[in-house]
Length: 198
Length: 198
Image 1 (spheres, rainbow over the protein chains, first blue to last red):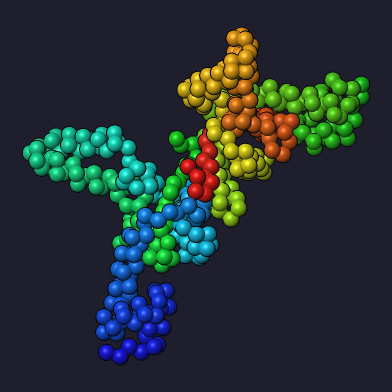
Image 2: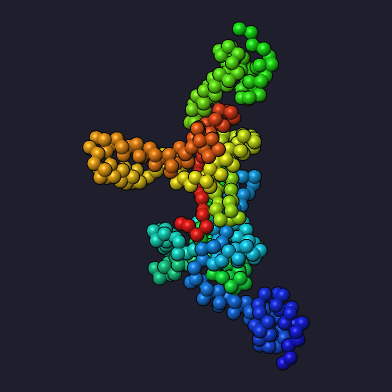
């Protein structure tokens, strides 16, 4: 099938991918622009996963102050080069994540940051509750694991649904910018102060 | 001694104190404007000390970002009422303290926040060093206490010399704003992220 140069150009504008990648994706999808975008996105995300081992120590420390100083967020997002740190895509990501933290009050960056004793206590509480509801032992354990997933999704920034588009997690949003910029991007740490709290 | 209304007015402008306090201070200092300011300042600081037990849960969460996002500070400063939190004096204090944290990298707010094991380890290191320098035991202990004071002055925000005027500590600066606003003012907590650190 013949793929027109204008179609390639349009896909490039939409995704930022290279000419050859765009032509191949369009050929694979028989000129369907929407499907070709999905193909490129999937490939980009796969590449992003490979990149996550690379060293990220450039980036941005960004703040967000809400309600005339009643709530404040400080967050560090890392990438690999100062060049990417200065791009609008990266700055926007940092800003969006600061807003997310302000709105959704995560307690940890990732699931792996939750201390073991917190996980143990959460799990025990869910098992106790399931038992109290009269559930048999095997079912109580399964229910506790399910509740633990709900806990991770609420408490861990990267697992939270992105406030502007709840179909994606914050972690997926970050991976998309990794795909777009070609660099390993990591949320390193954050602080969130609400006036009079903590 | 007769105190002119214009002198009272001048002292009021300089200190923000009330008419009667200004007249009394000027009478006490025989019309010496500078001494009268010192008297008012001492009285204000004494009042500030009395106020430090009162509940402070209003205030501001303020941020400061340095070097295009290479360093960021988030700080919460408390006062007693939203009214004072909105004053320029309070906003300026919050801003100055955020700058101080960025420039001087304190590890704790106050001496009382240094964990006991850190104090023990610091003291032991100073004693060891003094002994190694051949100092007798009593002198080594005294030297260790002196070094510990140096440590507190470097590590604790409120004990650090204020970067804009090293004759005052940050704690003294805070007490002055307490004297000026008439409210208990406390630095509650801060976070400081340097890119790629920690």
